[in-house]
View 1: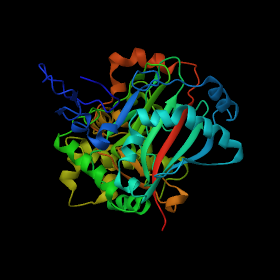
View 2: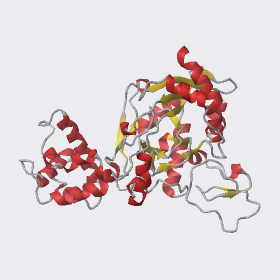
View 3: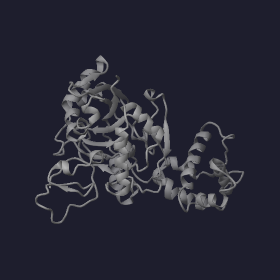
View 4: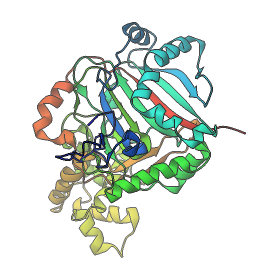
Length: 422
């Protein structure tokens, strides 16, 4: 059995494999004589993580390049280096400012071109009809983050896309273990608005169809990856860690070491006085907190057995939508902001469910000038999935990775598909 980078599946190789079947896919359980017999397209590339120094990748950072990236980027800041355009039968075109192009060129030649080949992304792209027939180009947007705080988007599951993003890569140069990006599989069908936006970018529905096809096979169990029933995370132990994913197939978040039930954000949901406000009465930070609370209650309402779910069944005909939520609040908090007897059950619901992922709403499409600043958020339906980082047996290693003083610096690439204008 040979190994190549790919999404780790849950299928175990056969105890007595056919000697003629050289390849086995842990994602699909399929054996084959040739690697093409077992490949699963985008699903194979859904989430790949490891170290640049792994034998399958065989790369290491050029130290001078790394030092130059730091020197050219403010501490805690981001350096938008530019874009590398790939088009059939043409040499890569580098687009950016004069100041950044020298770094972008070195990054492509010394790291990214080989990395994206070894992790399967460019071979996948080059095999697609939309690329071979020059219907679309691939724009690789490259940023460098100099010691970015992981707190920026902790507890916020999202996708890095305006509708055109196919792959995301994060490449670190860590020497010590660091917290790994948290992620979980998105099994929900794409919203029509999102699909329309993607089709506009890519020129037809072939990319969206490929993504939805893989998502359907994951739902049916044909593909069995990790991350369907749990929010993955943990610690990236190897030096020069990387993680790559298909943006539309997963939700991801900056990492947090430990249970989210103990996070500062969770304290908002446990303060009775915060629940007393209505939309009209709240202002400033109270209004922002109230919006989080209402979104949280919408999530809890959809989970069988929670106190607000039981309440909605009893009072479903009386109140609708958020009116029902404020009606529920009146049953657990009195007019002075003091908790009623039902409060204990409510807090239990928060600790069991919202403590796992904070909120059940994710940004499916980022607000960006290229999409007329249209943001799409939706229910992720992952509130009941446990987090790997909430496993108490893992806390010691998570704490150690959280406490490192090493800079959390990395290259981030968005691999975007754009139709060729006729």
